[in-house]
Length: 403
Ligand code: DGJ
Image 1: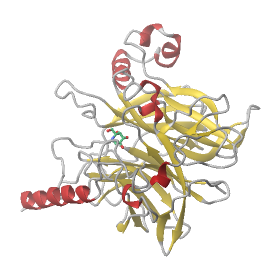
Image 2: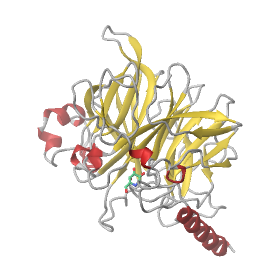
Image 3: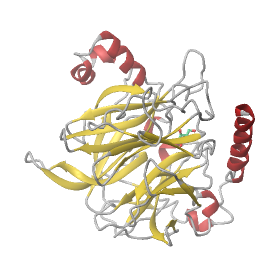
Image 4: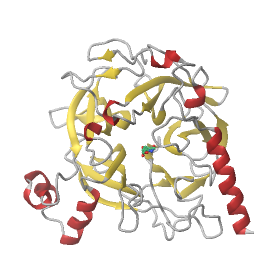
């Protein structure tokens, strides 16, 4: 019986993802989506141009893909704190592997100051013991820990979808990221399937990696969509609730099932060990077999939780879906596609990475328009999002200003 249900679940997820799959960009049917392609947005501009190139206050291309923006406490330069928009993301200057994590800040969401690479991969194996940057971070670690960190920061490894939270209790910054790479058994770049975590006293780094982990696993009385590799964590995001409790939301079971797991008070690991964690109390599996990734979670004005995801088609865009729930670890409802204008079947040719609030309280959708042939030139598409009739809606705007 279990095997039969598993087969049905796999067939329905394949059909489900095929429906949301489009292999061609809708350039000819919806040229408006690409109207800004030749434009450059720069510091001092007054309007957001979704899909344009975007330069920082030094005139360099912003490199913060798969990222997150939030209005959060940052150092004020006088031992205190002030608030600023912080944008953390993948610096894809070097392509698919060995990407550093970069951080930018802004007052207005258009002019961004670069604070450099706050988490750096190793340029080579020896650097761990010879480069002063790595020696000052990891010099005191044990040989086993150093070997683990060498794997996580390997120049051929994957560091994707970094997300940061400020931890008030410890007055520090915690960075989580999708940590991946090939294994001895499999050359596939996503065979490790773990979530990495790093900490720093400053949002501008340097972040020290603590480790990387497999996370929650399918309970024994449920059907695991990928029983061969328990606790996988790939595309991920963080969510800090209004009471300060933080969660990691990630795709697992070979990208077939999204999980949300509560973090501990330090935000550095799960609140309960995966071997003793209980579904509904410490974590939740949502729509097993649905094949979703690129999670972005937000809370509506109605107190409901809204989780947007993409289908799983590599760097190609596909149709977004939103699930919503009254309780974050409770039962989730399928709200369908949040996009409402031309280009909705491919999320306006983007993949979700974050839903964030401006300081005035309006909601912004942040998507990546990946350029497979030149990942560093992938574009940022930010659009206005709002709640209407209890559903999240994202509309297309070719030029707009978040308020
Ligand atoms: C889709 C994911 O969302 C991206 O972050 C990246 O991992 C690509 N797949 C790689 O194909």
